[in-house]
Length: 400
Image (cartoon, rainbow, N blue to C red; front, top):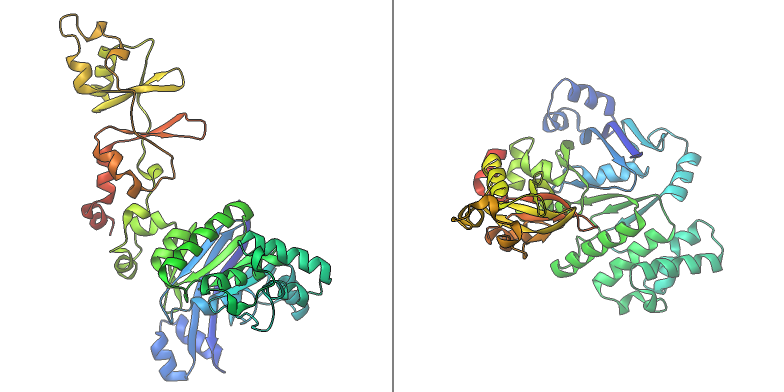
């Protein structure tokens, strides 16, 4: 994948003596001690990460952690004290005002928590505002704004006023305004923070659905870990201006970098973080037309399995359990028993990206779950015990 944005060793000090504060910080002094000694505030310290093109990169932290300062440095609203912020190789931290203006106009759009809609302008005019600032002709910006409103499901409200819309709909207008300029990078600073929980979840789902089609590079800021885990392809967790861990949701929940992160993830529903793919194993199979119940028993004993899938070529024919295969036709012996006589033709299946929370029922049935691809081919198997082990509190403790 192409790296779209690279942040390298970025610091931000608020105050008129930043170099003195940086020197103290690099010598090991704390933020609090530096503020007491110099009156300078450390906003961000040593931030570094990469964002791939088409990725949702979530920056998560509590109030005062530095996440909003960081996102404002990404588009030059705040200039860093030191470090580099590279967008396609151009350094936002040190480029000229003219170059920064071009980057903003051509590559970046921002969506804020507070919708910032103009109450006296129609929804269409609000959505087209960024295009107007860029000098796009009226007819072209109308067409692009209408397309963006259609993407967020609000084209029917184009001639309405903001006051006619609910909070969730107003936030969709804010998103449409960002999308209308067709940015390569979308910065979203707690965009759903002002919405009630139900509407917030709907907006999260809509953003994921949009991203599946648009594949924008998105930097998403939030203080909500559940939101971060739901949306983020990669997540950076901030504390006191530092990024303390960067990783996937599974990485962070399974292997928290320190006690601070561990405390955050302690009560997370692991069933909504881990997917079928994370606990699937290589499928062990027998063939319907060439193997017998005896072969199935031997395969299960060799692999320490309670059941094995039966294949008809590349197609799944069924599943056979150890108990049925081993006890089949004792008079003639399992070597003479055809697999079709002992296999079950109804069995649980799932996609690789199915959340473990949605596999509780299937796992409780006792049969291994077949993981299939888009062509319905068997690509993995989940043993029921693997689901329960991943979701157990013992596994959570072991990961800390």
